Length: 275
Ligand SMILES: Nc1ncnc2c1ncn2[C@@H]1O[C@H](COP(=O)(O)OP(=O)(O)O)[C@@H](O)[C@H]1O
Ligand SMILES: [Mg+2]
Image (cartoon, rainbow, N blue to C red):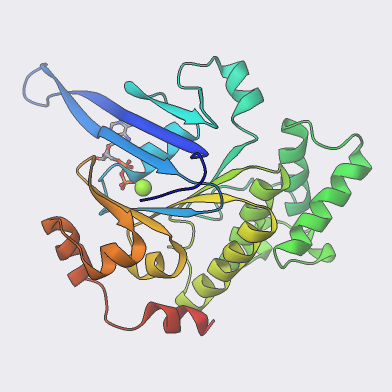
């Protein structure tokens, strides 16, 4: 892969071990959830991390987002290694720049808070906006940008559909002006037609706000639509990586080939543009 710019994010030899105690004896066993992963995310691009359930995708995302600590390896943002930063340094330097959107749109939100307050809270945590009024305005504008209306602000999560709630979660992430979004199966729980709408929204805001995406998914049919690069994870290891078109047309790894064979043959572009 040739690039004219430096990567915005670099993951180097990342390892995450979980230690568990055996059921039959008390011997502890080490399990490599992430086993020596290296990847680069370039400004303005989308890198799709694909692989079956349990392959280490979410763990990788959480470490990048500083929600989990790595066992070994480093992650750098614009060349700065933050792997060993203190919680206060992470809050200051990372949390605003790297935001994560999860799969379940409902559980990410407090059911007792209006969606306006959910976005305002994200702004407060990041110290954005000089007054309550300004934060409310930013929240309103951001919610409008993701396709919601001003009268939605005073409603509660249970009054929204899954697709609308995922828009709220995207607004929450977007409002703090991040550089990178980590989208962990963010459309996987939505109906296909709604998936298409949310994917289109993600494409639009990526351009508009100069974002870079790490798009985590087990669903290869969305990868072709959204990703510039693909990394295939298998049992914690990156077994193949490359430009999306190359991976889809000339997969080399045996596991990648199997994964691609399991994708429905409908044209994903068509399928998603229908929405
Ligand atoms: N906190 C944890 N403790 C022990 N094992 C974990 C923990 N989190 C994840 N794992 C294990 O690590 C592996 C990778 O998990 P995960 O990153 O969630 O995979 P994916 O997102 O690809 O489905 C799985 O086998 C999972 O059971
Ligand atoms: Mg996961």
